[in-house]
Image (cartoon, rainbow, N blue to C red; front, side):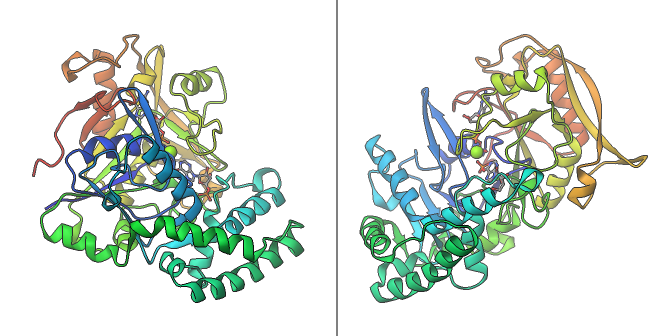
Length: 433
Ligand code: GDP
Ligand code: IMO
Ligand code: MG
């Protein structure tokens, strides 16, 4: 039965959180497999907004198990704040709703301090524009085999000795290289020990076997991606990327399940394009049209509040995402935001040194030189946010959607016309097989 990956097909913030929340009403399990609190996933139910960073977007459904697996970097204080926020709102009343893997990487304030210090030390175009959540330094520790793991929080001696080693190195970097204040061990250790007590109810020794068992038992398991394809560490616009692999394949690695367990990959994308932070963005609009998109779409980051860069939809980037992720079905989000644009652009290809490209070039240096080829479509003025039937979409909107679907040669199964759960038009239901 279905193991379904929901993956961002652009530069993040595509609306993955909304989609996963909608799908989760029919799912038994929602699994986060990479990234950390750099993610900001927004769910809107009856007008009430919930922003999740580390907790999977199935958490509003009391019967859905949410799993944070070993591929995730867990900010222990951040996740506690999220848990407290949910509980204060009458959610997450049963600790069994949330499982955190003993093998997940622990992210500490020292990682955030290092992330911030490194960004501050870079100038101009060299700045990555990270979220400042410590993601790069935490994954570095994992790769260099010195990370604290979530399970270590519950072993007093291991915790102290690993933390000592960790702070020795991080404080040296912070003080000598970046002229920052060191972090004292006793205060931090006491805070972590308290956090461990508070997080103990969510501890799971082996999330990989929990997820595998669910799949084997014909349960419906959704794997929730964070960030987006073009931010992938290996296939994105390096170095302007995040520090994890954001592709669908990462679901298998981060959660610990075999590729044969994945039956469907849903690519989530906006009816236009946005990016936060630095790096190539060929269709970017640095004019009043881009500003109108930002205002209409409330394009300000869920995690950092930064303005998102806005531009026309980029089909070469989407073709690349479909190929890299093996996307089987598409979900198009935020169609309502394009209401009121007299004409709407679609980037169908790029020009680079006289050549036509249907997908992005490999290096970000070339990517930053491409010229987008734009085809123009007539817009619409009708408010779409209250529609309940596909048949009521204006003809110009349908033309726009048909063109995109044909160009991408992949079915668009869901069309989202507002942030709310109910503002969702189904072309084809999920879990139909
Ligand atoms: P994620 O990181 O992919 O989960 O996306 P974010 O939550 O960071 O950003 C998407 C934003 O768009 C959130 O504020 C959502 O509430 C909002 N949103 C999602 N779908 C729609 C939609 O169809 N229309 C509009 N207007 N807003 C939407
Ligand atoms: P969700 O899951 C959009 C971007 C940052 C920066 C780069 C590296 O909400 O879609 P990092 O803090 O990861 O080291 O920053 O990646 N970035 C995101 N952009 N949505 C996200 O997550 C992002 N997570 C990281 O802006 O450019
Ligand atoms: Mg987001």
